[in-house]
Amino acid sequence: MKTFELETIEGQLKSLPELPQKATHPTTPQPSNGYKNADTELIRCRAEGYAKQWPSLAENKGRNNAAHRHAKQLLYNKNVPAHIVWDVLDGWNSRNKPPLDSSELKKAFDSALKSKGQPIDEDFADTKPAAQSKVYNEPPRTQAAADELGQILEDTIDGKRDAVKMPWPMLSKLSMALIVGTLTLFCGSPGASKSFAVLQLAIYLITNEIKTAIFELEEDRSFHLLRALAQLSGLSDLTNPDWVKAEAEEVRQAFAEHKSLIEKVGQTMYAAPDTQLTLEQLADWICKRAKDGCRVIIADPVTACVSTDKPWISDNAFLQAIKRTATEYGCSIVLVTHPTKSTSFPDMNQLAGSAAYARFAQSVLWLEAHDHKDSAIKMSVGTSEESHNRTLHILKARNGRGQGMKLGFEFSAESLTLHEHGTIVKKKNN
Image (cartoon, rainbow, N blue to C red):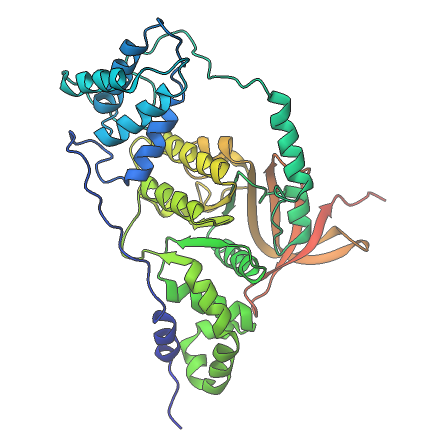
């Protein structure tokens, strides 16, 4: 009988189409800056966000001068391609009361194109003009504020704002982490099984027909699909080449049984093992998946992206961009991250990256690995002593009531999955 080797199964898995290489898009020639390789859609998104601070103007209130100034700010201060500047300027003009005539707007735009440029900012993330007024320009306010809330309530009643369920019922209920328009941080030290956990989450969502995308920023896709097969089959030894060789028939049977679902998982999974992404590129990928209609978007881990010498700027720009994406497209974004040190204790101040991560995330979950210990755990049928080797800390839950609570979990070495016991409660003193 022919020996079945690991390469056989990996060869089949690798036959799935890989993530296409990022195409480059020609843009209007501009001076070089830190975003010269950024995707056009990401630049457009940031330019539109910058333009939201421009007030709408009435007739005889300096609309022509403002149009000229705004165009110069984007063209030279922010180094935005001319065709995007025109679209953004036209969008701003539509909010004026009344708008400038299109010919007048074009004159202001052409004048800005011909004028001498201002110095280039170091980073597009710094969205304040070089000579910003000390006066706060309020954004336009709608007259139907109550109607906005009413629409949110109706969407909730109709199920449009449901929090997507996770494979762990108590965590879902207490954190409400995957409600629309939200960002969740999932942290854990190396070896805490956080990557297995998010893979288990992705498989659960895909199985339940929730459109999902996951970017694996470490290792290639076959590596993670092999882990997925191990979780689905309950055969953790699939990750051991010696066992695979020795148990060829069992391996073939497991692969045949789960091949269809592995295909679905593979189609939602992206990987770039030979390329270290920038935060701008990851934000762009998240935006594209949101436009594709993905309800949950996962990046594992965000700490694998290229670090910068000014993380307080790059992190803030990245988080603002993906939060706009989550809000605009009604999706949930999950970022897997690490603590600052391998021995860090569960605390939001111990998260890798700048303080912006903890500040802007609606949910922060921290998975802690430890030896088996007994805790008083409250379950649906009552409270009892349970042994567990993982504790999940809900450090932040802006949309749920579980902030500060801890849940007991068991990580199975056989299935490589997390099993939820319940909430950990303080033991009563006798």
